[in-house]
Length: 243
Image (tube, rainbow, N blue to C red):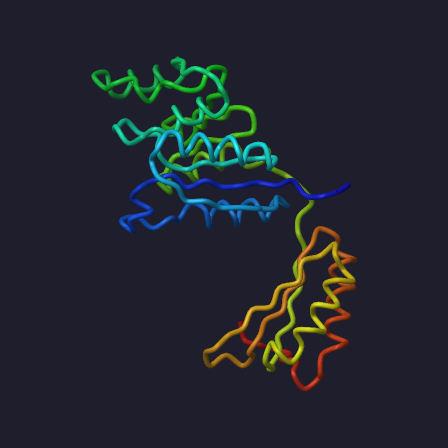
């Protein structure tokens, strides 16, 4: 579709996430940062430290989106297999990055250079004060799993991912979703260029449902929002939800 926002997917890699030993903080951060830049996230997956599984996932998703981000699995231990898997996904051999190798030698002369092996032809940039590499090949961006390092890497490259910033409007209703679900469905059908969401609450908030309208076209968002507001019972609308 002409004017459609750029798309992205995120692959979180690590047995530690799947076992509950570590809580994924990276995908929520990337979702927020990319959304703020006008990039639409279409999928997030959490997968194990397994070469074939990572390679298959990267190959599949990289063909479906404009930008694919992986986090995790690029350290020095036996279970850090992301770069090997990405190389397999893009059908390139591993080759030593002199940029990474020099960084390792300068800081840890006795360390293995295993972490310096990247897909042949990959772009390597140093982030976080020159401590951690950002590795990209084609439309795949390989980021660390440690949240602070991942954020430093994204800050290095974040300006590249730019679409039309999304616009969001919200209306708060003291009503049950079943009372307006069909009306909302009709409005969504008539305004396909925006995304309408309905989010119920079951606590002591002054409203029971938050309805949102999101899109890249401010006029389209405003039109859908005003139609929703016009078709709701005025007694349902909570003017100041206190959020």
